[in-house]
Structure formats: structure tokens, C-alpha cells
Image (cartoon, rainbow, N blue to C red; front, side):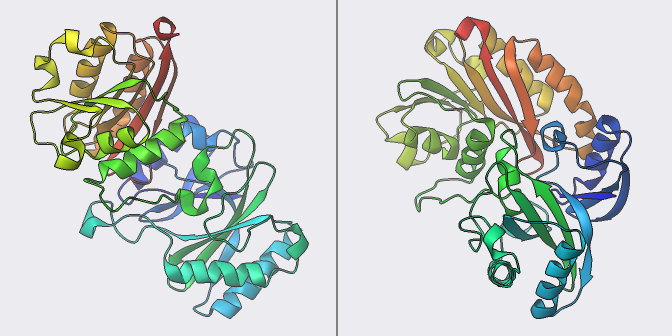
Length: 354
């Protein structure tokens, strides 16, 4: 039995080490940049995506197909489904990332030709009555109780086919093809931080109140603050750098033109949420956040830790343990689809903040 999972290009080695540590019975198998598989004697664990920092989504492999003809591919997909006596409700057609996250401003996405292939596969299903509502829509989320058919393009003429189930506790990324949550970006977005914190809030389940004040550490040029403002929050942006006028002139935004360590703590007294995206070493980020959390009543944090070198991934379990000592009841970490060489951390609700 094999399990496969897409990941960020460059993260394959740390992903394999993570799985070896958390799931010792799994052994690394076939892999390509942005795609890793594991040999195992047991089905895909229900908590695999929750435990893994680097897996975007995951599936149990059903086989491979080598062809450059979409008609042949479609027929072979349904042949594999029939051979395994599988009934599917949803279809996910996606690709492994062809480029690294920082190369040519690449953003993971479902290419038009794969969206077309998705519709072709759905239209040829011999089990149409089992397909869920909107199964012909490549961007429709899978629902709890549904079985997903995964068709992954590894090379132009090489596809892997697999399946995964959606439960009530499945993370949001498992519900979309390739783990890519579709997001509509406003035309006036000032930086891509908007994109990754939009995904971060969806992944973490954080739902801030409209009256809450949020501290944005490392706010320049303002992409994350822009997202927070659109959620109705009041934002305090701390950064010695410039803030884009779109954000700077917003009535619920205040810019503190300094470094967070130089900011008067009296200004942070009413902060209930903290986001941070600082281009510094992970321990420095945690030093800053720990000091701010210790002097306030914070409901939650959402922040990035930069993996300046991939080897820093070995320290992530230790960093998580450190964050847990701050008193948060729920601490999670994930390399999101729209992260670069970094991970996102969510820490929710201390006893003091209840």
C-alpha cells in the first residue's frame, strides 16, 4: 500500500523526515519535486494531515497511468475505480508544483487544462448518481462523508490516481484539489501577505470579532493589515518601514513607525489578536511574541516562522513546545499553500483571555 502527498518544492526531504518521526511504519518511496509517496502496511491515518506540517493533502494510491491522451486517461481512471470497487462522490484533479515557491513569482493553482480534464473525467463517470452536487466544478469543496478521487499530474504523460475520505474533522485543505483553497483577491491588494493570511485564517478557524483590536507585527507594506481591516478589525501596524497609502489612510488603521521591541507596551494594552510576518530567525520571532503575550490579554496568534535554511525544520517540534508554554490551549503549525519557505503557526486562547 502506498500513500502520496503534494508538498512545496524543496520541502521533500524535511517532509520525509517528519513522516519518519511521526509515522515510523511509513517508508519513503517514489518522489519528485513537490510530490512524495510512502510505502505503508496500513491505510492513510485519519490524523495524517493534522500531524504533518508539510503535507498539503494526501491520498491512498490506487495506481498510475502513463498516457498523453486525455480520452485514454479518463477511461483508465474509471477502470481503476471499478477494479477497486470504489464509489466516489468528488474528483480532485491537480498537479505537483512545477516550480519552487519563490521562482518567477509562482503561486500554486489548478491550470486551465486540468480544470478541463476534471470536467471530462466527471462527465464520463459510469456512476453519475454517486457523484456529489457540483462534482463537475473543479473548485467545489468536498463535504464530510464524501469519498474523493485524486488524479495528480506528475509529468505531462504520467498521472497518479488515489483516494481519500472527508470526515467532520478533515482540515480545510483536504476538501480542495491539491489542497489549494480558492480565494478571490481584490484588485487593490498591496502585497501577497494578504493571500497567505487569508489562507491562514481559513486554516486556523480563527473568527475574530468586528470590535477586536489586532496587532500586526512587521506590517509593511500592509497586505496582512489590509485583510484584517476587510474583516472589520481595528489594526495596529508596527513596522519601521512604509505602509501603502491604501492601508495607511484607513480609519481603523494606526501605524506605529518603529520596531516592536521599541514600542511602548501601553500602546498594546487593548490588543486581543496578534499576527506577525517578520523576516528574521524563528527564535527572534518567538522572543518578540513571548514578551508581548506576557504583558497582555491575547486571545490568539497567527504568525509565520521563516525557514531561512531547510535544516531549521528539525527544530519545529521544539519551537511548538516553547509556544505551548505560553498557555494557549490549541497550538498548530502548517506550511500553507501560499507560504514561501516558512510555516504558519496558530495559537488560540489562553486561560487569561477567556
